[in-house]
Length: 176
Length: 234
Figure 1 (cartoon, each protein chain N blue to C red):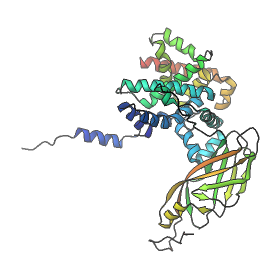
Figure 2: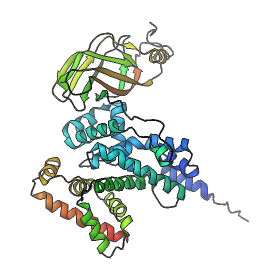
Figure 3: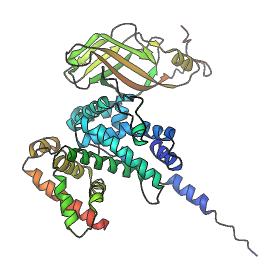
Figure 4: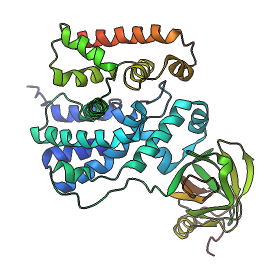
C-alpha cells in the first residue's frame, strides 16, 4: 500500500485533524500536479483543491465502500472541482456539450454526477486520447497548439478529437 | 482414513496479493501526450529528488512535460490556504505555503543516481534546468553544493545553453554522516542541494535544486575486505 492509500485508509477509520493533515500532506502536491496539467492556470488549482478536500471529507465520513479505487476517485473529484471553478468564472467550457449529450442521452446520469462520470470514463482512455480531450474540451487549446504538442498536422486534430469523443461515449455506454 | 488438510483461504489471498502485479496508482499515470510522459508522482519527485539521464532526455524533448512542470511549480507557489481547517469549518490560523515564492526551483539532473566514490575529495557532475528562466541567467560563480556533498569552490561549466547548464564540482567535501557511512563500507542515500543566484530581473533572485543520490565506495579489490580502502576521516 502506498502512502496515499495508507493516509486515505487512516482517514476512513478516523477523520481527526491529524489524519486529515497527513492526507493533505501526501495528496496536495500530487493533485496540484494533475490539475495544473489539465488547466495551466494556478489560480484555479488551489480553489479546486480546496473544494475537493471538502468533498473528500464528506466521502470519508460516508465510510468506505467496496469496489472503489479511492485514489482514482479523489483525482476525478478534484478534476470535477476544477471544472466547477472554471464555470464559476462564467466560462462555458466545451466539455459542457458532452455533459449535455450525456444527460440528454440514454445514460441517465444525474446532473451532479455527469462531470464525475465523464472524467472517470476519460481517465480510462489511452493517454493520447485523454490529452486530446482535456486539451480540446477543458483547456480550450487551439488545433494548432494541440497539433504542435502531438507533432501532427493541425487538420488532423478535429478528426482525432472526434474519434476520441466516440471512444469516450462508448466507454460511457459500457459503464451503464 | 486420509485426513483432508483445511485450506487456508486467507493465506492464499495474501499470497495472491503478494505476487500479483501492482495496480498502477492514479498518481503514476502519465500526464503528458504519451505513456512515457511524467506522472504526478514523477513531477513531485523531479523537484525534490532530481532526475537521471533517461528522464532528462525525455524532459528536454517534451514541451508538454516541461510546461506541466512550470504550471505545477506556479500552482504550488500560489498555494497558501489551510484546506484542512477550511474543510473542518475552523478558522484558518495558519498559512501553509507549499513553496517559497522567493526561490526559483531548478531541476537537477544526474546521469546516474548512484555515485561511486574513489577519492577523498570526489567530483560531482550535474545539469541544472531552471524553471521559468533561461539557464544562461544562473550566476555560476554563486553556485554551491551542500548536504551530502559540500563544495568549497565555484563549479566549472562544462556545457551550457538556454535550457540547461552542465557543471562540475571538484574537490568536494563529504557530508559528515556520508563520510561515516563510507568509512564503514556502507552505501548511503542522501540529498545534495544546489543553490545559487539568478541574474535575470523580474524573477526570484535565488534558485535551489535538489537531487537524491546514493553514494558508495568504488570497489577496490586490493583493499582488505573488512576495511575501507582508505580512511575517510578528515
